[in-house]
Length: 96
Image (cartoon, rainbow, N blue to C red; front, side):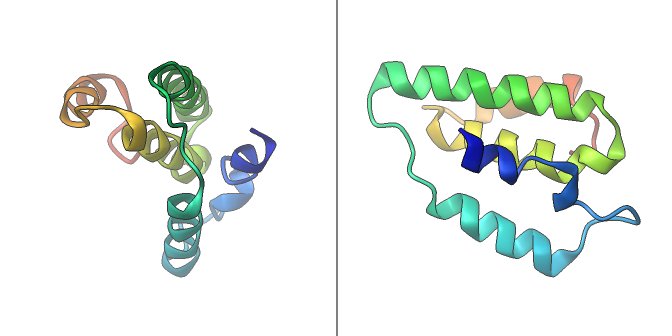
């Protein structure tokens, strides 16, 4: 959604790194977001967040925080969060 995309922009990450306070605030905001309730909605949401995460990760270090937030959103709705983490360890840059 547009609101989620606002937290997945390079403005969320400083050019010289990630501000810890901003990161904490942004994470708390993401935690307050409503998540889908049905299996179909969760699956669609998961896939959209993973796609956004991969796209942002490919754009470079300036996008690490927004990419990580998308990944966090995806994990929130996945029934077994450990599985995607294992896969991502091989595919997503370590800073994300």
